[in-house]
Image (tube, rainbow, N blue to C red; front, side):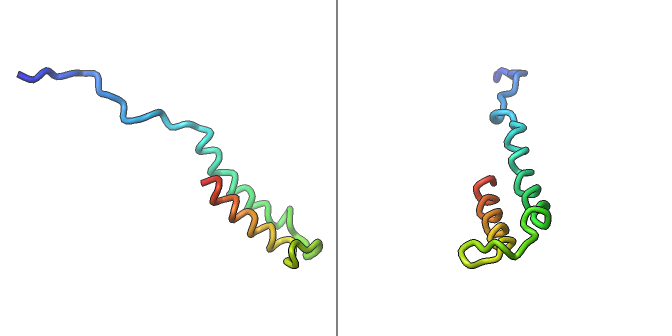
Length: 65
C-alpha cells in the first residue's frame, strides 16, 4: 500500500513583493515623460531630450523586466 503524505511540498519560493514593485518603475518613468522631458533642448547625441529620454527608459525597462 502507498502512504499518503498530507503535507504537500511547496512548488517554489514565495513571490517577493520587491520584484513586483520593480515592474511598476518603467510604467512610472513612461508616465513622467511629458513632465520630465518636455523640451527640445538640451540635445543628447543630436537627439531632442524627449526622444533620448524615451530611448533610455526603453532600455531601462528591458533591464527591470
